[in-house]
Image (cartoon, rainbow, N blue to C red):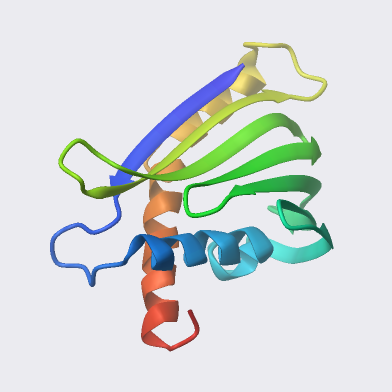
Length: 157
């Protein structure tokens, strides 16, 4: 199994501050259309095919791989991406919380396996290294906050 986690401050020194509501709006937009938040060309399709008050279902092509995700919302706090189809199975979570000093944080964590692959095998080890590496989910959190700031500055948030 793959377990990875990363946490970044929402409002580091030198950045335009985001409120919890603004950071949350960015997470919801990311859930609805990952193309705006991932490097150009990485996500070629992202369509919401079902939605309710508590979740949505999206079908996407990311990195050339088709997948279907059920995305559950805990408003203002947490977005959970359940991997329904695609190479991975399990959950990816983006969560907003205040640390002990009251500073807003954005945390990623996941618990995943690879369909049809040996648990703990070389493929899972490679995925683990990717998630934990410098271009992994910590970088994804930072780019999500950067894009949220851009959308806010454009008046699109």
